[in-house]
Length: 173
Image (cartoon, rainbow, N blue to C red):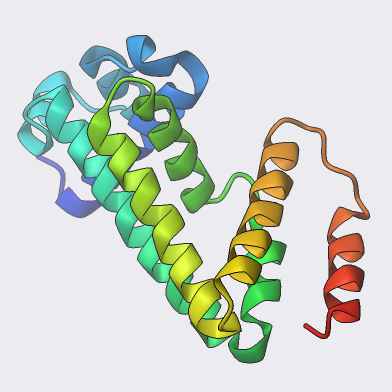
C-alpha cells in the first residue's frame, strides 16, 4: 500500500478526471483509471470500491475546490466580481479539470448535475452578497460562463476581459 493514501487518492481522482475529459465516461473505466494513475486495480479498489465511489469522490473534490474558490473570491474584497471574471477564463487548474469531469458525468448522472448546480449557486450567492443585486450578479455570472466557454474551446479573444472591465467601470462597478 502507498505510504501516503491521500496522495494516492488524489492521483486516482486526477486520472479519473483526465480520462473523463479525454474519453468520456465510457473511457474512464476502473482499469483505465488504475493504469493512468500508475496504481494496481486492487489499489484503486482499496480507495474507491466501485466506479460509483470514484464518481462520488470526484464530485466531493469539486465541492471542496468550489468552497475554496468562493473563499478566495471573498478575500478579494471590493474586487470580488473582478476576481470571478478574471478566474473564469482559467483553464488547466484543478478546479477547471473538476468542472470538466463533472460536466462529462452530468450527461448521465444526476449527482453530477446536482454538484454543478451547487457550484453555480455558490458562485451566484457570493456575487449577489457582494453586489447586492441579483440581476447584476446573474449578469456577471453569465459573462463569466461565456468567457469560460470561449477559453475552453479556443474561441477566446485576448481583449475580452479588458472589454468587460471597461463596461463594468462605466456601470460604476
